[in-house]
Structure formats: C-alpha cells, structure tokens
Image 1 (cartoon, rainbow, N blue to C red):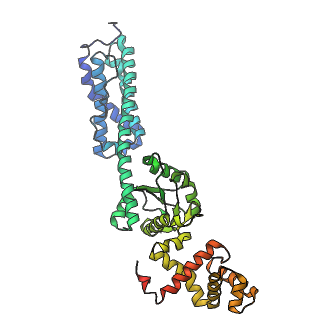
Image 2: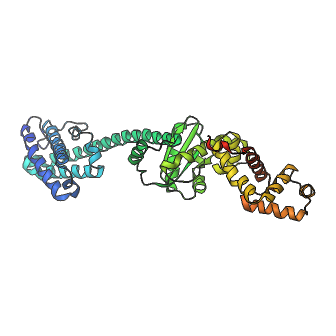
Length: 392
C-alpha cells in the first residue's frame, strides 16, 4: 500500500480525538448559528452527541484503512427520532458542514504530513455519505408525517360530513393549520376512474394552485374537498373539476369557518345524488341550484329553502302574482289561456310574470325555472300549517 494511504491499525489513537473535536465543533456551531443557540439544553446536548458520533465514525473508518465502498453513515443513529422535528434539514446540513469543517481544520494535527491528502479525501467521501444519510432521515420522517397527516385529514373531513363541530375537530384542525381559515365551502363529486388512489393528491394540488387550503378525502365512490379561503366557491371550484371523476360536481354554500361546514357538506353530497335528475346541470353546479331535485329526494332543508325563497314571498306579499304564476304553469305556460282564465289582458299577465321573476329570481318563461317554480309552489301548498318545518 502507498505510504500516502491510510494503513489499518496505524491510527488507533485517532478515535480518542473525536471527543475533543466534537466539543470544538459544538462551540463553533454556537458561534456561527443562531438556531443552535436558541435550542433547549437537551436538544443542544443531542446535537453535540450527533456531532461526536459522526466524527468518531469518520476517524474509526479512516483508522481501519478507509476501505472501499460507502463509508459508514452512523452519524444520525445516536439521535432520537423527535430531533428531526426539532431541527430542520437546513440546520442539519449546517451541523454536518460545521463538524466536517472542524475535522478538516484539524487534519494536519491528526496524521503525518504524508497522509494529509489521504485524510482530506476520506473526509470528502465521508461528507458525501453524511449528506445522503441526512436526506434519508428527513425523507423517512416526511413520509411518516405525510401518512399521519393524510389520516388526520381524512378524519377531519369525515367529521365535517357528519356535522361534528366539537373539541376533537378543533384539535385536529389546529394540527392541520386550519384554526384560522375562513370562508369555507365543500365541493363533492365522484372518484376518478383508473387510479383512484391518486385522486386526493391531485385534488389537493389543484386547490393549492388556486391559492386555497383544502382538506380532501374519499368516501367510497365520493370525493369530498373542503375548500378554504374562498369568497366565490362556484368560481373557485371550476379549477378543481378535472380532478374529479365523471358525473356531477356540486358546490355547497359558503360558510364562515370549518365548524359550520357540515351544512355545506350535506348540501353538496345531497346535490351529487340529486343532480342526476337535471340532465343539463352545469359542472360544477351550486347545491342551491338543485333545491328542487334535493327536495324530491326528501331533503327537509331543501324543501324549507324552496318554500321560504319562492312560495312564502309570493303568498304573503304578492298573492296576485302567486295566482298568476300558478295559472300560467297549470295551463302549459300559454299566455293567452292564462289571460282568459284570469280575465286579464295578456300584457297584464306579462307584467305579473316579470314581477314574479324579480321577486323570487325565477323566470316562469324558461323551462328550468318554470319547473323549479312549480315544485316550490306545490311544496308551499302542501306545507299547510308547516308542522314539518321542525323535522329533518
């Protein structure tokens, strides 16, 4: 072996220098890095042990002749798993760089002059291995954290769907960074075909590109997204549509925060089933645009909303408009027949129908609005004393 190369057995005393070099590296970190000084005494102690383990492993490997193959990456074996959550990857690289630089500075004191180059090359090889070891530690931590976050996210979405606005939801939402998110709406559709496992991630990424925090979970064939920070849910949901599978994509009403999102979730999920009855439904469609279909499914909140928004204003404030609208619908939306029935001029009927549209936001002349109006008036007349208002 060349005299410039390490010789196994010649440097047993090198490892005894590891403790002193680790102390020097720790003091250097305290001088050069603010983050190290901000750590607790226990964490600083762990970082010092990591530095000592790394330097010891390096010098031991070199004393064994720096055998071919990757150097031993034992630097992070001494650290508890929780340390990866305390210091960042960038800080870990600061630690590694400082420890390696400390050894490099001491090379002339560690080996004869003829081996200085060999030890420096060994340090270079070892530092490369340490970089890969650090990346592996943080990659594994990220995978574990990502798996936990996905499970926690799914639990939060399921709680929202069930309407469980309690302390458990508050705690889990805080862990996901949702305690201060305002302007929330739930978007529901179907899981895409082909690779359903990738659907939540694709939907989450689509929301992120739109600048919105999101919570996503699959519930059987349904894909549910709790969208945060939205002022116009229907517009914001348009960019999410490609992440859903075929079929309707329904947007629940905007609510102030996550703890009120149960109402938005129920409307959106009910709308996914109800939208099948409206063959011309846009994609996405607001759940409030499906009140008539949701009422046909027996959804009490949809029935109440239709009666309150359509029948009640006409019945209590404009009974003549209610009479005209009902006659117009009953006679196949034929203007002249309605005028004859009510003994009115056709222009008077036109005027009243226009007033109906202005009052309830439904145009009796269009097929879709006329059908919704018909359902709303029927529900209003059936409500009678409205004893069903308090039921679900």
